[in-house]
Length: 268
Image 1 (cartoon, rainbow, N blue to C red):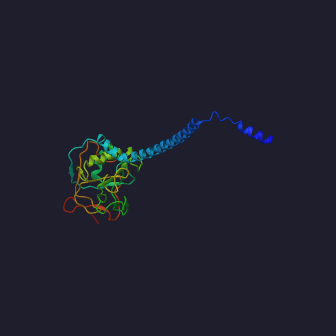
Image 2: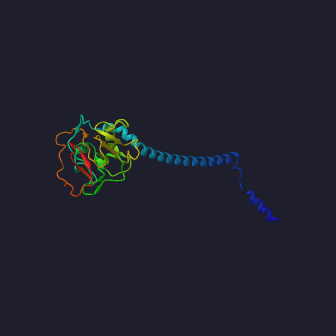
Image 3: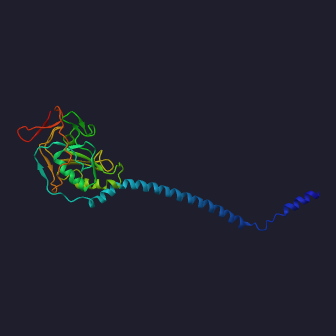
């Protein structure tokens, strides 16, 4: 019995006088506050991540819009009234003054325009004439263009920024500026351009490439046009490249020049 009394007395030694209803309530509130603060913290972190993702997407998507908004300030002044060049043209290698893929060629009559453009916009030509040469060699991208493309006549070029990028970023601002200069309103290119392929045109646009075609007389694929429309350039900008490429030799089979009762061309 003495042992039982000692146990009871030990149990009774616990002091519950400092524990009351208010104490339990405060502890409960503190516990709920901690859970609430943790939940709020998780929500803040989640919201920050969502905002970061949305900001990144908005930045990428907004580059094209930003390019169009800033482009007018980058455009060059118009070169002046256009003119028709009726003298025969030839296929020539694009000069070094115009950054381009090695071996790219165009109709000689648009070379001064390309020089003028390259002096004002940081452009890189990825393709010019596409088709066979007189020596049987093929140049350009045969499968990249439509069957009636001006690339087949040497009167079109595909342009990208000089910086190697396929992302629509700040490097494309000058290209966008050039596109707006050549075509201020969709499907309404200004002379001497026949067609401008950029935003709104499938397979073209910021991050892809800009296509420029020059107005010219009707011509069959791989045939040089009888006349080409160009814009005048300042004296000195139409100088020929110092390095002249030898005329291709060999049997006919590509683009050749021949008179047919006047200024004209044909391919055989």
